[in-house]
Image (cartoon, rainbow, N blue to C red):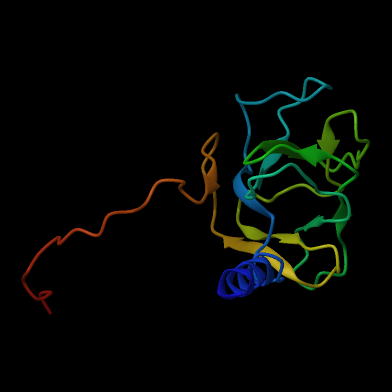
Length: 159
């Protein structure tokens, strides 16, 4: 009985909205020499990662650079493998066919702006960035490796 209750609690924890299946793992806002899209353009790009251990469809999720969430680009039906990644070009070309390269209807501003991944309800934010000015051909995102805390100095700052 106790074991069944424990399984029930675990199932409840992993199905609540507190865990997003997807994240923006990395993006590039000033692409001059990197990835080239099917039009031979160096479009800015956004990498989406499936955080779950099973294939998951991203249909109905959104990307936006609009902090008010009024304008959103919707993902088509695409199955992303466990812990897999897809690239979405932030080109302004607005292409969202399942069997071709994906392109948002907006471009990213390398001088800094807002970027968010929105859940299918259209209002819940899975992850958001308010990012500063970016450097050419340098991507931005979260590290997949743990960051170590190290003592830099045991002295107080000089004032």
